[in-house]
Length: 156
Image (tube, rainbow, N blue to C red; front, top):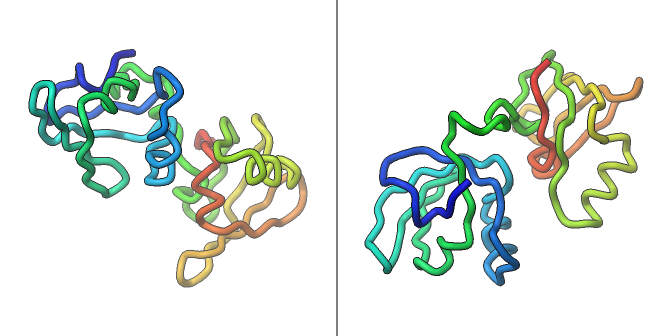
């Protein structure tokens, strides 16, 4: 694990967390920078600014902010096999490995049976892609796409 500022340009990394409590943490998480997200460093000016690419977004960040973003090389991280629930295709199954999000949303998902180690099957996706219908714990459940993006699974 190393800081984003120590990464190389045009190389892919995986975001693994923040080194300390940061005022930018919530902002970056809202943009999609969450555990397991792929990050590519597009350009970097030493001790100044970086441009990174993640979740189909380009973002310029300050050198000091990049010091607090922790990454690992894509090949060395075991979580690169994890996908978000909304990335499954109809009929595919997976096992829940992690749920992210703020306390209320996370608690609500867990109350619906979305807990680590639980098998889940994607039944169907609405014509416009939202919501999705799942089978979990013997019942069918519909989730918004934005909620499904908070659930990391391992295909199975």
